[in-house]
Length: 184
Image 1 (cartoon, rainbow, N blue to C red):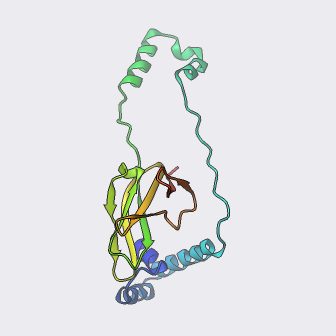
Image 2: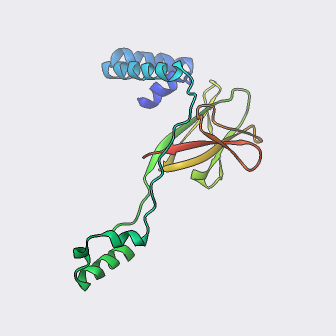
């Protein structure tokens, strides 16, 4: 239901879809309450333009020398040392990167094709799907946690930064990439 609420708020639904959505709000108190909460959030988000970009604290990288600061009891026996080395070399679990679903949406009513390219897909190009006749294009991708750069490709040529993301950087070709922070 979050998906339909979001599409309703972003005016991405056709008239028939809007009618069905309003009927579902009328019939289900939970959907009604959730829709109101999200509309209130949207009102807050659109009330003032953000005039600054948030800052992020970078985690300090750990190195092997930091192990020297551990308590000496930890290394009391050769057996304990062997276990630690074995665990470091052969972890019990694979290190998996958490992936979080993210929906990319852009309004481009005059074009016949919109694509996305970014660091989270190794700068490959993926097509977005047209949302009815609303002029919106969208795709939902599972994005790994972290900081990512991306751009939309409109009409097969023009590179456009995401208008909903204020954090951007210049790319190597004279354009701009949007910067997206996913997860913690």
